Image (cartoon, rainbow, N blue to C red; front, top):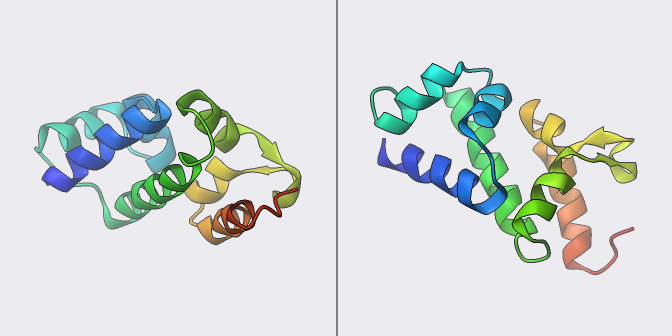
Length: 111
């Protein structure tokens, strides 16, 4: 369970996600996220996947953007995602579309 605590801390530190944000993103209650953090329970595998995907995306964005810019990037509508928000795609477990944008960003072909 220590890895879950580290994941939550990384999301808080790297992109300013609150535990309320994580509750919304994973579909868990705020109390449930607090229990994860306290090591009293573990997230459902689908919630772990969402948090892992989000952590991966944030780690990649950290090479280009500040903490505040990362959160804005995740919550902004993107023309390359047909005006969808990256955070919604991650929530819906369609992270591959977000990763494709990051790959283009790495290649300096980001539009």
